View (cartoon, rainbow, N blue to C red):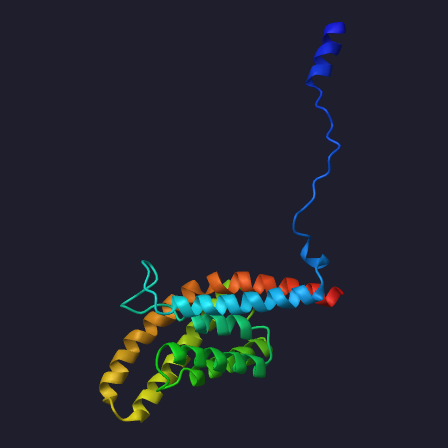
Amino acid sequence: MKILRFIGKRNRKPSSTRKSYFLIPPLKLWHPWWHQCVDWMIMVGTVLLCLLLSPTRLPGMELLGIAPNWLLIWVVAWSVNRSVFSGMLSGIILGLLQDAMTSPDPTHALSLGIVGMFTALIQKQRFIQEDFISIALIVFGMAVVADTIFAVQLSFMGDRRWESIWTYYQRATLASAILSSLWAPVVYYPLNRWWQQIKSIRNSS
């Protein structure tokens, strides 16, 4: 009995009286002003990241020389849970930013603005549920819409032949739509998760 008691005392771990503290408090304990600041920082940061990724051609991120339309994916992710005006405004702003990096003639603001408006209308009518597959389908369709609008603008400019424009359009649109829909969850999931957390905190307060 003495031996067993001695072994039991040796195996007994001393209880730690020290308490662990998190360096960063939970999100719900933050001041509302910090919520707004971090929200703006995430929005601006992700938009800049999409702008930087747009001209980038990394392995596995291009098809027939076409890369995903990262700004279109961001506009869809934003417009899914926003009003029609907010979706259209975000598309116009990101389109102007893309014009600043590429060429304003023809403009990308028109196509992305219409994409934001259509996405908000689709989700407002609840035609499609909000999940990864539905978002990929929306991105696929909106990529076709955006490239069609861009091709129509090129046709009306008159400095290119219609045949060459629409031949390239058919190949580029399909590649862009496929890649954008495949990469859409990479942008949509973290942004949507963050916005849902912020929305639930604001509704509970």
